[in-house]
Image (cartoon, rainbow, N blue to C red):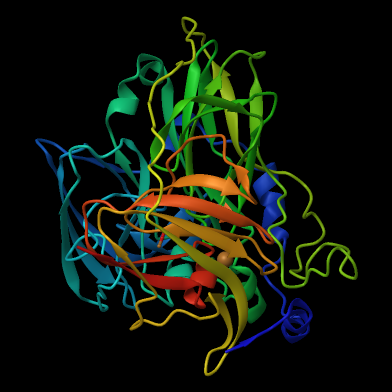
Length: 491
Ligand code: C2O
Ligand code: CU
C-alpha cells in the first residue's frame, strides 16, 4: 500500500478535473419556484405499529416520480420519494417483507437503531439479488430511546449509487421524548433532505470519476421529494422540525431567516435540554430535532442551506484554485440555497420551550483505546482508494475486534484533504473531545464529523448484541471506495 502525500494526490486527481458534472440549470428553478401548499408537505405515506407489531411490504424498484416541478426516474421503496415513514414504539416487533425489484443486489440498513446486527435484522452482509425477497424481522428493545432513525441500502460498492437514486426513509421510534408536554404540543414536521442529478429527460446522470472521489452531489435539492415546500408555524406556537440528511455526500448547513433553532435531539437521541443555535450543520447520515418559536412578525421565512466547504481534492490551501475546488459549480457556490419556507399561520395560545427533559449520564472510563486514521491513497488492483489505518475495506478481514459489555475510546484522526463523517453501526456513542478540547455537550450520537486535520475522541459502550458489523465514512462514495472496516463484537 502506497500512501500519497497531498501534492501527489492532487496531481493524480487533476486528470479527471475536466469532467463536467451536472450543470446549474436546475438550480434557478429551485430558487424561483413557489412553496407548495401545506397539504403537499405531508404526502409521505406512513406505516405505524399497532398492538406491538409494525408489519409492511416494501419493494425497491425504479419509478417515475414527481419531484417538485418535474418528473424523474428514481430508485424508490414502494414508488415513493422519500420512502414511507415507519413508526414503532420501544418493545414493538417489526416485520418488513422486502422485495428487490432493482437491477442490482441490495439490502437494508436500519441506521441508528440498537437492534440485532445478525440474522434478518440490521445485517449489512445480507445480499438480496434482483427478483429476490427477504423478510426482515426484529424487536425494538423495550428500553430503546425514542428518536429519529432511518433506513437505506447498504451493500458495499453500491451504497452511494442507490442512495443517490433516492432509496431512503425515516424510521421513527415514538416514546418518552414525544410525551414531554411542550414537545407534544409542538407542531411536528419531518424533513428528508435529498439531492439528485438528472438529465433533461429526468434520467439519473452518471457520476464522473472525480465526483465519486469528492462524493457525488446533485443540483436538484428536494425536501420530502418536493422543491421548496412550505411548513406552517402557528404564531406564538412551536414547530418541531425532525430533519434527516439522506444525501450520499452533501453537507447541509441550515439556518432559518430571523429565527434561532432550539435543538432537542441529536441523531436518534434526546439532549438533556434545548440548545439554542443560529445554524445547524448536518453531515450525511445525521439527524436533528429542532424547535422553532413562532415569536417573530408573521410572514414567510426561508429555510436556507448555507455554503460549507468540506474540502476537495482540488484544494491547494486556498492558493491556485482560489479556494474553490474544481467541481464545476463555482459560480454560485457561495450563495445560500432556499430549501423550504416556514409560513406563519393562525396564532395559538403561547407555548413555552421545554426546560430539562433527559438525563444523559457520562460513560465510565474505557477499557481500551483504539486509533483510526482516515486518509486516501493508491491501493494495488483498486487504484485510488479511501483508507482507514492505511487499508481499504476488505470483506473477509476483521479490522477491529471488541468484547461485548465493554466500553472503548476510539480516537479518529483525519489526515486527508476532505471532511469525513464517521458512523458506527449498532451502538450509539458520546463525543469526548475534539483536538484535545473536552466536548461540553453531553449527547448520544451515531455519526460524528471528523474535519480534515482534526482528531476526535469518542466513547462507545458495546451493549446487548454480539456479531459482525461495520464502521465507515458516511460520505457514501468514500465508504464504497474503501473507507470502512469490519467490527466484530464478541460475546
Ligand atoms: Cu447510514 Cu452504514 O450507514
Ligand atoms: Cu469520507
